[in-house]
Amino acid sequence: MQMPSTQSTESPALAKTLEQVFNNSRQGDPAQAERPGELLLQAGGESFDALHLMGVLGARQGKVDEAIGIIIGALRRNPGSAEAHALLTVCAWSQLKQVIETLRERITKGKSGEISPLGLLPLPETNASEQYLCARQYAEHQYGEFLSRPPLCGTELRAAQERLRIGYLSADYHEHPVSHLVAEVIERHDRGRFQVFGYSYGPDSEDPMRKRMRAAFDAFREVRSLSHEAAARQILDDRIDILVDLTGYTTDTRLEILALRPAPVQVSWLGYPGTLGHPRLADYIIGDPIVSPIAHAAHYSEALALMPHCFQPNDRQRAVGAAPQRAAAGLPAHGFIFCCFNQSYKITSAMFDLWCRLLTEVPGSVLWLLGESAAVQRNFQREAQQRGVMPERIIFAPRVDYAEHLARFQLAGLFLDTLPFNAGATASDALWAGLPLVTCTGETFAGRMAGSLLNAAGLPELITHSLREYEALALKLATDSKLLAGTKAKLARDRDTCPLFDSERITRDLERLLCRMATDHRAGSRQHIVIGADDVR
Image 1: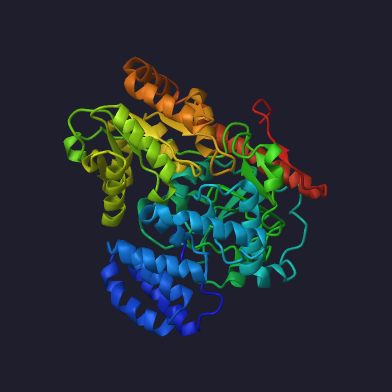
Image 2: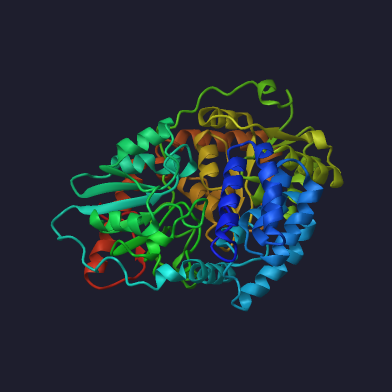
């Protein structure tokens, strides 16, 4: 989730205190942040940031009723917080309707400059057009100072016969889903044709993935401590031809760097499932014919650059160990296990209604969710009880390391996807571990991701186009053991050969896209790019 912006009306002292308190809270010890939070509230009075912070901390500490009131108060003052919206999805579904109506009205009136585009993605009823308008207004409001400056770079690429210089900019070069997805692509880049630079502004951790990412690039630049302009100038000095942003509007974003235009071609990929909203931030967004079909081009500020099979790469080096015992995972010895390890803010009231109906239809079954906090657990169990499902049938998975997380997928019978914000990296994890997934295709990029993954995994029969179809298919798979066993066998048989997990093929397809971008740029063109599966590599 994102930290709220402190760029506008707050004093520098208040902004500094806000950042300190959030950092303390995000390090896993919200109790330490409580006293500074109280001081912040006194200092901030009725400010949005102070109210928002206290709501966030309250929810994390289990003070849900108090948190709901504070969050609603904060949103009345400024409806632009992604984290506040996310908290409401797990704290107060009944409050969302009014918030969504307010958001849509502000977008329509061109007053959504403080509304995070990320916060809009999981909200029901918002559409692709509104997401585009929100992103455009937000970019202009947040980055207007940088967008108004002359671009740092010229328009020329390096000499045509030299290797293209590709830069990858990210906050997530550590144990993070983005790195889990992209690591092998970076390692497999053809060094005879490409020089590959990594630019990191995220935490400088010493975890294994961080070390792997450092080693994967030809050059790895730490730019966290640099100003936006200094970081952009580092990219400029490295003579990067194509800069690929892997973060977008997600946590710790620094799109100011893209706004300064340090590279002649700029691309949005993987980290954020939607448009950045402003053509100066990125020339292209990498998608595929399912997540971002050409027919949807009007909803993007970027030209579409379509991979032939799937927009999302995968790392074949992920080890899936032996499944733990059910009891060790907190699961009952018998009964069907429906699973959804998407973050809780993606779960809407309508999806939970549907899942509770499945639990009712499948006696002895349970629903296995991530146990992100005690407050989240209590809320889901309360909501289940209100729908006639015993609270103990909602079971929560604790946080474990990545290898254990992959292994425990094998205990579930079926993964239930969310809408309007699908699983992305989590869907790939489930499929890699051998767990089938049922999805429903939506209108937006975020709502079409799992369909793309299933298609590339050779399982298009698990893609549905309405919640009625979704529910019927999930029920059939849960009650027809032969059908489910056949689906799992097909997934296991094709895992090592299907396009979704063919890292070599994905890397070569990406390189063809990058070369087309360079060719078109030299010709003075920026148009949609569609790479066919049978094109010469």
